[in-house]
Length: 72
Length: 241
Image (cartoon, rainbow over all chains, first blue to last red; front, side, top):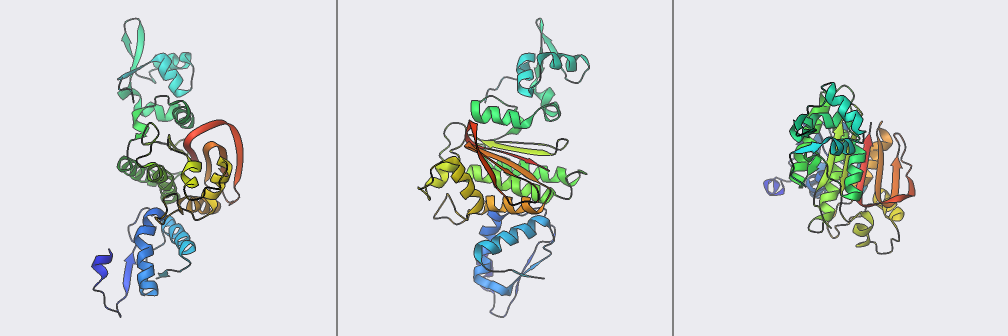
């Protein structure tokens, strides 16, 4: 994912849309989202996070990283 | 795994944790499809794959494999993580359509996935004998069972926390501290995630490794860990909901 985003401009928002996701878990979430959170911080917006496993995963990743995800 | 294509009635009875008479009775009633071989009945594995799930005690089958290396139906064996991923995804799909599981399916799938993935991640290239895991679920009994014959949590965590002295301590650390047995790789939050999910949802977990047994009950983050008589070389988990 990161190579695709390297050309993103400073002013651009990175949106991660969980629409259609059936299940999510921290082992994959940590590899996928944590680097993006570290890189883009509050410029990364998570959308459609109502799935229970998405919510639970975001919660543990926030505990682990000590950072919070911006959510729409 | 032995590749014999059928069970004798005695083998099937042992496998299912029922008496041989119970197996005969089910054969008579047509509940189990059997064929005559000489003077005896045999049951072809392809004919009992679905029946196993309803008749059997998954946890007992998994435990007998984890401790005694007893054979179990191949449908529960996931030799590698690719097979496991495919089956856990399939379980999620089936649960979505199930009245008892459709609300919790995403959480059940993700915690089963975390526990199963741990087995592969921590034993990669180090399986003591049989690689892979047991993975079975029973929508009627509302349970998911996972087991491995890996190194167990104590040996895995001792790599990064050599001061650990016993399985109870290792189990507590695994479920409470953000620690990775694969350090310097990050990770290490899978079992904490499982605990968090159970604390907030109607899901229960029994998890055994070595001679330690942990119980996590729905709605509580309290860890109930005790020493038990039996010794599980790897790990075994029972999720109920």
